[in-house]
Length: 319
Image (cartoon, rainbow, N blue to C red; front, side, top):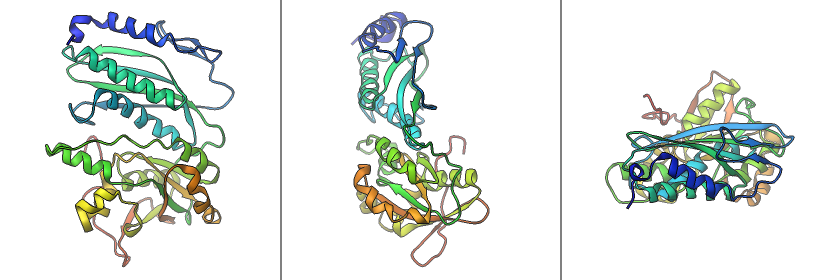
């Protein structure tokens, strides 16, 4: 199998530029890949910009997922930030740091997986960069738009109910097993673009759950100037997490991370809409707690109202 050192940076880029140039330009893509910069006309709506990086041996390890699934994961991890603001992606940039020993076929599959995921969500891959490094690192930049109201972390108010889409704990459990050398599969991050768009008109605040429910609700609390109380018994635990960990599942799921679900702060007068909204979201919607007055912070309580001790709030790169 050919390696990157055999093909070279520019030959690989030229081949993919030719491939990407075949995508439909239209009025929105003025200059596509291959020039010094892409030129796009996104439209009249406010623009949403986000970027994220996946690094080998930090966010994933070789062999955890296929190259195509890794590309798909890189896109979905980044687009989760847009979903949390009620928006969606329009254009993407992909920068890759790759070791020269990496098989060209693996890099091809990674980019194709990314491009397919972007296209399925309505976004075009319009450029990027390839550089040599000692390990694989994938940096994504997305430009997006919101069809309606843009929701931030900062709008939460005391009395708001907190809801979570989908389930939590399953991906975190998969990561723990893979790190321990056990066989398993790292699941794709969920795609919550539709849920974000549907929930945005009724939400005071939203955030995506990437580093753990407690950690990310804490970010929302600090931005909004409130505190939060979560109910352990109400957390929507992934079935595998509940089966594997039993009574320890709620505290694990609340802090494990890798869920990429949405947390929504909804005013009390809107709570009656939750059941009506659920069928339109493409996933379940679970009430997990509420925002309360007080210094920013998050408490996880058991069924008796006792505050549970947590080993950590969630993932921190430097902790």
